Amino acid sequence: MGAVHRLATRKDASDLYDIRRRSILELAPPKMPVAEAQAWAAKLTRAGMEQKLRELEVWVAELDGIVAGWGAIRGGWLEGLYSAPEFAGRGVGAGLLEMFERLMCEQGVRAVRAEASSNAMAFYLRRGYRANGPQSPSGAWPIAKQLL
Ligand SMILES: CC(C)(COP(=O)(O)OP(=O)(O)OC[C@H]1O[C@@H](n2cnc3c(N)ncnc32)[C@H](O)[C@@H]1OP(=O)(O)O)[C@@H](O)C(=O)NCCC(=O)NCCS
Image (tube, rainbow, N blue to C red; front, side):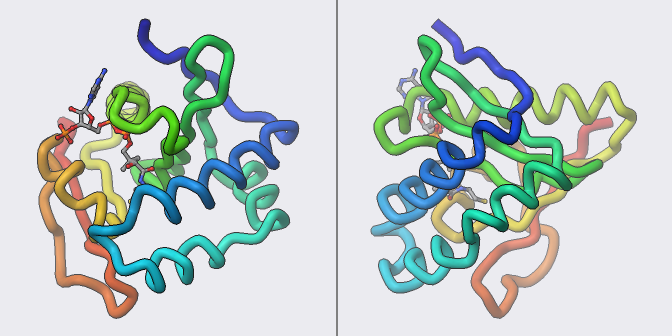
């Protein structure tokens, strides 16, 4: 059965913080060096997660009522996409991404943009995204996908 998507609320902050941290630490390596994943995971605090919930449009994917992943958008920007490691490879990330593209299309956004981490680059390339500039000093790739 496909995931159910819903907007996140402030009550989700702790679950989403935890999923982000575990997804980075457990799913990004070995494509990303462990030290790099640790540094990336540490970039967001619990207060920072609460701030994201206030400032971004954050969506949750639930499988059988359990939060399995989440993603965030702002306008035409994909600001984050994370799957709980225990649900990885079950279409949670791809499902959220498709939903975001649909939402953006409806809002007249012409192209989705994101900063892809090196470990997730292949995931995005297989879904029609293209590198849109040089790799940043932090290792992220600017990517884009034309929608309209
Ligand atoms: C990148 C990330 C979000 C992908 O999430 P995911 O839920 O594992 O992704 P999906 O399951 O949708 O897709 C992963 C693969 O599983 C496959 N898959 C999809 N549905 C599946 C199913 N029902 N059964 C088995 N495999 C399936 C997909 O085909 C996909 O393979 P492909 O990329 O070779 O086509 C996840 O790996 C993650 O959180 N990584 C750490 C954080 C991160 O890098 N985020 C991106 C920041 S830019």
